[in-house]
Length: 390
Image (cartoon, rainbow, N blue to C red; front, side, top):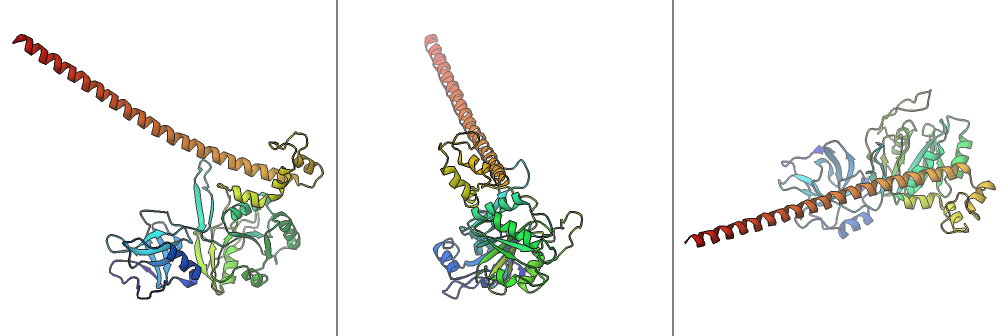
């Protein structure tokens, strides 16, 4: 049941000594242990576990063992994200509220979409599997797949590639082969939601209580796949333009969807771009073969360009390293380096502002001290003149 909370409504019961939470949204024994480790604030004796199901413009939709509530955003602590585990209690007015966001064991994030930004946008938290959706009815974008898998590895979750619409193209086998080659070390599942093919295999990758997020462009068939996995129409589906294969955003917000096997699925709006954010660990996972090549270069500070004994250049010449893959790696590294420079520039500006404030404060203090000494000297001179007149 979905309700809008008010102070007049009954809220949570804590008669049971054992913690209870929203089982249909992934609350398990390990989740209960997390809440036991990170106890509620001292002032919240009646707090109970909850999970953020969806973020709306002015409210947070949270599920507890007793149902769902729309609550205000918390005024302190972490800004909640879809998938967060939270303590639900009461605010100072006695109204139901999110009183604390628990630490996240994983977080899928990207750089905010607008070009000038260097800020992180968290798409979802406490995710166990990140499924990168690849439709076969449009050309495979290698760089997009690589950068999305880098973000998936870096999130702390397990990456998975889900190929959709396999019934729509005679090139499905070719796409699968390309994806398996490019996403080495990542499981690949081929599905056709319309025909029901591959769904059982996909469900085997989502154990009870686990959370799976589907990540892909609009029109990739995510909503159709979600409806097939959930066994009911929980998402609207839209047509795809024949000219460019692009679809309309039928999903407008990130939301948790319970599945029949006790696992949880997080749908996300189609993303046109995926800017990486601080993804060093993900780069190591995705491009581990290049890291091995780097260790074979003659010089430890090799720039992998024209230096003698460069293992990368030798691999490119022998075609054991794909030129496109090397170019993709360099592009992603430049992107991360540019983001780091933006962060450093922001840090420098903050330091300069702080230093300027300190200098101005010291200058004001020095001027005040000088005025005080000047006033004291004038007073002494005035008193000396009065004594001489007497």
